[in-house]
Length: 324
Image 1 (tube, rainbow, N blue to C red):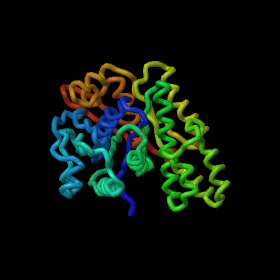
Image 2: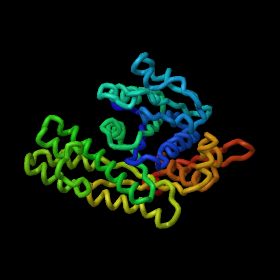
Image 3: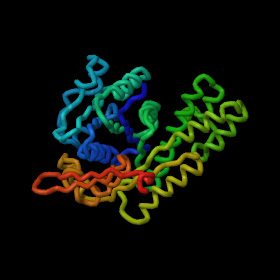
Image 4: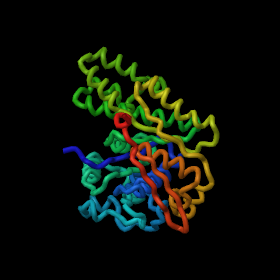
């Protein structure tokens, strides 16, 4: 039976782009809108998400799930924010980042059994199979990038790796085809120019019967993108450029759901260990994020802070079919 939880993995090919900060504030905003939310640190071996919530030393982590067979509920940590709970990753113990396939399956099963409306899963950087498998557990995945060209290209590589990982798992019983999408085994192929059209052609030359199913996998893969640290109108174009790039080379419909402007308010909130959406909900980054949350939840969300209290206004958007 399919999970009724809305799982939103947040990934990115490059570290240092503010992914954890945005993941934390996404979770905060959705929780303030009334949903039961769990924020999960998926950066195994380098956990620091707890600090963004003002939690100094998490009591439990995923290692308790493996070592002590803890129940999902016992790993939930109170954040002090209404409707929001937190789960720490395995910490930075030696070897904690090296999760095998069985542990990945156990964590995914764990996620789907949580008592929550939405789970935000903040992933570590890179394109290891573990990260890609967590990114691919949901249709509502988000990839993040900053506007710099190095970040854009890393993000493109991440999206392609996630797509090829999906195709590779589909072809697991057909090794002659699977090797065409296993990016860890490329020797002569230039990864920068390896497109879906090239992949389709190579697979068709070996076994044309797989073309329809592979096209269906590509069609169902529809991640969203957020551009962080926007400083100019030119930076805004990074999202549109990424959409065009991904469509051209991967034939994937990437959804550009919004951007976050560069601001000292964000840096100050990190230093104070308070999410910027709570510290200053009327700042420009907070307004940007509220628009993104509105897109994800199909609502119009507005937060106002007065006398130390946050007031939430939420209106559900009606589909166009109801306008008549």
